[in-house]
Length: 223
Ligand code: CA
Image 1 (cartoon, rainbow, N blue to C red):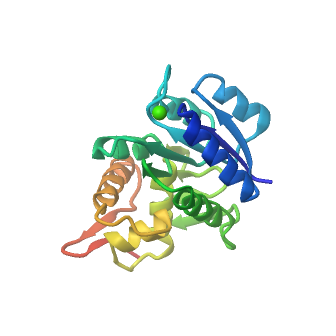
Image 2: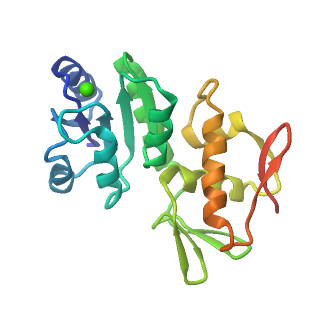
């Protein structure tokens, strides 16, 4: 049974999500604050974390940072704040998705399923993908050039992997959003620019692999 930790200080929301997700067959661990979440993840195990941003004590962004220091567990941020800043920061810190409150449990479930689907995708078994001097280690989820290891966030890794697996082909930002996030983020194609910018920064001076801008269209990694 998949284990989902729900970190949410609003009791009503927490209980609603808990009932809903349990009904869908998940084992749910509720947390009213960020306290003890790290320990609980280690002790109980976690397949996914639903993380509120505004929390008493340590907030969701800080908790995400701490979780990411040790774990690659998928994280879906939920927040009452719709600011672009939070979304970008959340994704930058390694969040996998972002939902603005109020949202329906059904919508959250769809996002959760999309993440689990991507993890279970046939052909996505650990191994390596190579291009020029770059090796993507699918098990460790890091990029390597010789002895140099580049730490990538989950989304950076997914985007680079997708472009390399489809090298020589140009994609629009919308196509990349769908490929990497698993559904369409209407009007949020800047997330892709942001990811590409960070990937380029990491590749720059380290690898011969380049993410090329296709003007008026999107991006491509040359074959
Ligand atoms: Ca809250």
